[in-house]
Each structure stands twice: as structure tokens, then as C-alpha cells.
Length: 186
Ligand SMILES: CC(C)(COP(=O)(O)OP(=O)(O)OC[C@H]1O[C@@H](n2cnc3c(N)ncnc32)[C@H](O)[C@@H]1OP(=O)(O)O)[C@@H](O)C(=O)NCCC(=O)NCCS
Image (cartoon, rainbow, N blue to C red; front, top):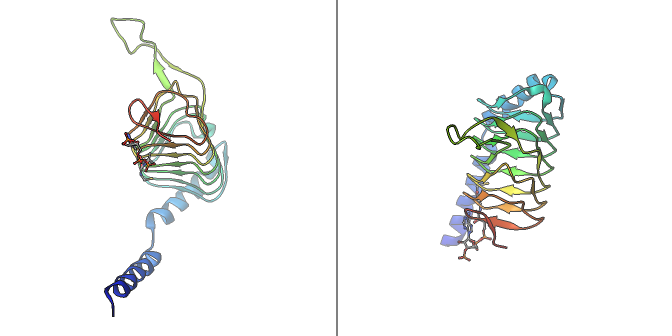
């Protein structure tokens, strides 16, 4: 047997094994989703909520169908999550955020909703306030450890935010941005 054929067989066997693997976080998270469903302002099905997810003021949060929220993530007030949205581990989603259909957030993504009044030099982090709402457009993919600052109100439909980026401005539809500060690369 040629080495190419052997490695194809090996890959196929691995895939079979992976297909058979039971994803307990999905099963337990699915049960958690069913239990939490009546508490949301609106909630579709199925919803997977993994362990350690913090939902602030759950009665203000709206969720669509086929949503998965991985462990350790935090979702604040008035967040609307549309259909088929994936939220990775340890994401932080600030208040008044809309995630449109088919959005994917990698792990440790941070979408900030609030900032502080910094006019007082004796205490820079003064009163906290919201800069309005923000929308992550349909099909956008936000890379690992990206930070979207509160002044950003729109990340375009089909946009990509590169891993580790700090987004300081709105991102047009279909663009790929990356870096700190994030710039359009494609
Ligand atoms: C944004 C991304 C999709 C771009 O991929 P790409 O189209 O193949 O881009 P390239 O690698 O050709 O890079 C194009 C340029 O942008 C720069 N760049 C790419 N990604 C970058 C990033 N995350 N931060 C800073 N600069 C970046 C490259 O250095 C390159 O610059 P140059 O032209 O000066 O050499 C990819 O780099 C990325 O960040 N993916 C996210 C991965 C992730 O988070 N995975 C988690 C699993 S969901």
C-alpha cells in the first residue's frame, strides 16, 4: 500500500472516531438551554449554553434558533442574538449589541458596550455610560481575542475581524480588517 493511501485511510479512521465522539458540553448545554428558555425575553430552539455562562438581566436578552454559547462567556443586557450564531469560550458581549444571523465569534472576543466619563482628572474612570447600540452584521466572523471598542456601531455583513485586532472604527460590509488599530487588509 502506498504511503498516500495509508495516510488517507488514517485520516478517514480519525474522522469516523471524531464523528462518534459524544460532545457532552453540547448535550448538557442543550439541557441548560431548555431550562433557561422561559426566562429570556425571547428564545428559539435549540440553544446550547455551556457551563459558567453569565447572562445579565436575562429577561432583556433575545435569542434565535440554533445558537451555541460556549463556556465562560458573559452576555449583558439588551443583547439580541439572531439565528445560527456561534459564541466561543470566554467572550464578553456588551449591552445593546445585536448579532445578526450566522455570526461567529471565536474565543475571547470582547464587544464593549460601555465606557466611562473621563473628564475628571482626579478619577478618570468616572460615571459609566453606553454609546448606543452596535450591530455585528450577518455572517461576520470575529477572530480570536479581537476587541471591538464601544465607539464602533457596525461591523459589516460578511466582514472578518482578524485575530487579536482592536477595532476602533466601523467596518464596511465584506471587508477584512486586522491589527491594532484594525485596518482594512482586503
Ligand atoms: C484576518 C485573517 C482571516 C486574514 O487572513 P488572510 O486573508 O490569509 O491574510 P494574510 O495572511 O494574507 O495577511 C494579509 C496581511 O494582513 C496582515 N494580517 C493578517 N491577519 C492579521 C491579524 N490578525 N493581525 C494583524 N495583521 C494581520 C498580514 O500580516 C498581512 O500583512 P502584509 O500584507 O503587510 O504582509 C487571519 O489572519 C485571521 O486573523 N484569522 C482569524 C483566526 C482565528 O481567530 N481563528 C479562531 C478560530 S474561529
